[in-house]
Structure formats: C-alpha cells, structure tokens
Length: 454
Image (cartoon, rainbow, N blue to C red; front, side, top):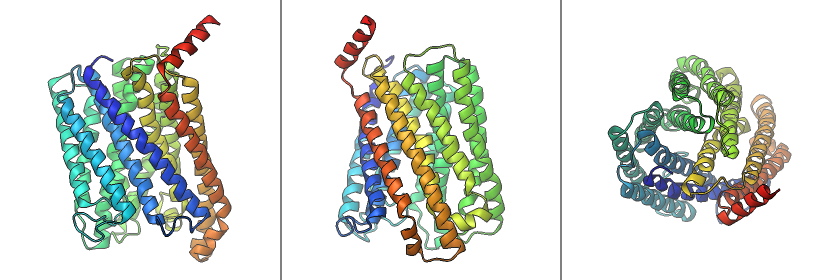
C-alpha cells in the first residue's frame, strides 16, 4: 500500500460485503415466495422483500464504487485523499440511511408521510429524508475526490471515474421530481435507472477495469487509456438515446420506438469492447501477477457483462419483440446476469485485488476465491437460462395465447424451483468468497510454507 488514506477503502468494502450477504438472502426469500406464494405473506409481504433485495443491491454496489475510488485515486493522483475524516463521515451517513430504509420498509413506518414514509417508485422507494442524506453523502464524496485529483496527477482513469461518479450523483436528483402525470414520471424515472446502469455506471466500470488491467497485466498506460476512451465514447453514444427502449409503451411519442430500437441495439458495442479490451490486455501483458483470482474476476466481469447486458439486453430490446416480452421473466433474466456480470463481478474484482494490499499480506487462498467465482457465476448463468425459458413460455401463453397471469405462473413452477436452486448455489459461493477474503494470515503463511517445502 503506497498511501495511508487508501485504508478508507477497507471500511467501505467491509460494509459493502455485509450488505451483499443481506441482498442475496433477500433474493433467496423472494425466490422461495415464487415456489411457496404464502411464505411470510402476513409478516413481510413480497413487495417489501423485493424492495430490500433491489435496494441493498444498489447500495452495496455504490459503496463498492466509493471504496474503489478511495483506493485507486491516491495511486492515480499520487497523493493522499484530501480529507479521510470526510470519507468516514460520508460512510456513516450512508450506513444510517441504509438502516433507516430497512426499518421503514420492514415495519411500514410513516405510511404516506411526504418526508418520513417510503415512496412508491421502484428502486427509489427511499423516504425523502434518506434521499437528502444520499445527496449530502454524494456531495461530500465528490468534493473529497475532486479536490484530491485537482491537486495531484490527472490521468484518464481517474478523470473518467470521477466523471461517472459526478453523473451518478447529478442524475439521482431526478429522484426528487415526482410529477403527477404517470408517463412523465416514468420518463424522468428512467433518467435515473437507465442512465445509471447503462450510462454513467459504465464509465465507472470501464475506469475500474482499466485500473485493474494496468496493475494485473503490466500493459503500458497509453494502450489502456486509448481503449478506455473508445469504450467510454461508445457507452455514452449508445446509452443516452438507448434510454428510448424504455419509452415504447409509457405514453411517449411513437418515434421513440425507432430511436430506442436503433440506439439500444448499439449498446452491445461498449460491452463487447470491454470484453475484447480485457482479453487483449491479458494477451499483451508482460506481468505474471500473483493475484490470479483478481484477474479471473476481471475477465469474468467483462465476459458476463457482454452476455448479460449486451446479448440478453439485445434479445428483447427491439420494439417489435419488446411488445410481447416486456415485464416477463425474460426481463428478470437480463437484469440478473447484467447486474451480476457488469457490477457485482467488478466490485469483487477490485475487492480481491485491493484487500491483500490493504491488509498487508500475500494473496489469500486463491483456490477458494476462484471456486467462489465458478459457483456464483455458474449459479447465475443457470438462473439466467432458467428465467429465459420461463419468460419465453410466459410470453407465448400470456401475451400471445391470452391465458390468465396466475394460470401461466402455475405452468412455470418447475422453472421457479430451478431458479431457487441456482440461488442457493450463488449463496454458497458468496459465503465461500467472504471466507476466502477474511482468511487469517497465519493460515496463508502455513499453506505457503507447506507448498514451498514440497
């Protein structure tokens, strides 16, 4: 570790991993409701479980991004973080807001209250007071990292990372705008949800992946930065107007069907470029880095993001197809693999690379870490195929044949059982991952000594 303030990342990564476990447990409970619909129905309704599952996903990914920034920006800027104290205050605000959200959701507190009660819009159900806290935390973060970069070395990696994080914070401000017109509400709502995950988050993903490739492969910075600029340009060119594939059926003008179909088809390009970038960097790399697990997660991130966000997104992005498939389990298949590939794997890659450095130890038992990768990725890919087949049947029976929704759900029970089983495999992989990251130093030394003796 070159800079003392990089230790800030350790706290962020720890909280993120804790929320990751909660998110996966929430996913298992939601999956079980699909096979046993009355499970917890009176204690915790399905809608609340789903809110906890999706909200904890977003929060732990954001904490991972913030931690990654606090880890890599000192190295890129070649100076300490402007104010470590502010970074910990920011984390405290985010943790307090997260606890407030969980309590509000579980006990349905302050129902209907404009400030304290939950709001009804998916992914941004947080009470207004929590949203204000998120904005304050984001402002603290942006001030902290921007001042660090302005006073230090400027690189393409740090500049694009901060551009993505500024965009993330500014787009979240639309969460405060809730017009009465439903079509207008959904239009601005997608400014947050789509332009995050298929816009500014892609900038964050590309910059963190570029940093990892730089460290793990030893490829010249100039080569990495040229790829980075191409990926970012493609992401913004396709992603901004690609938002139109969400406007097909919400009451917006018909021209969005063509704009959305054309530009969202192009959204495959930046994800393919990221996959090509990762593999070309490894191929050109001169460095035999000891942290093979971090490299595996990085390559897995680029590959699964291409298939989850790119290929599975393209499957139902054309308006003629989307007319039948929107809102079915095909959407769930795309969402699960896209989030897992692009952002979950990315966070775990930076955790896997950074934690041995932050904890001042050799790479831990990488066999366990890589086994966790294959368990989690295998489980998620199987879940994606399961939901894809379920969605295809659902589309035909419900949207083409006109069968009733609940009758169709009964026909899909086998797929829901398989989805739950794959979720259990993912959960086992998560536990294995956390154990491998927390493996005591003594055990690592003993293992290394025994290997050396052989």
